[in-house]
Image (cartoon, rainbow, N blue to C red; front, side):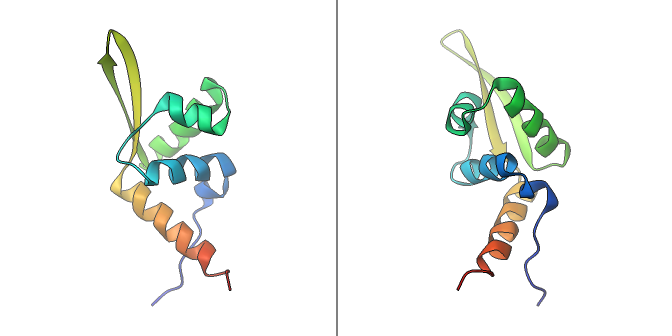
Length: 94
């Protein structure tokens, strides 16, 4: 069995935190992730685009009470990559 591997994209603290938030739920609203990370819309969008381009997350939009809501969710690839990254991190713990 090979040892768990770190993922280069998740070495970025913001991208790691985005995936950690999304790992806990099926989907999370863009605004909740933005507020939790305390970043601007554009800073979050930049990191989401990188994760999306690598197939780690899906961005979908819906309407609720005449307001557009952007939803974020990890793909199977993103979820598995994050779990592998967490296993690599935990291999350094006592």
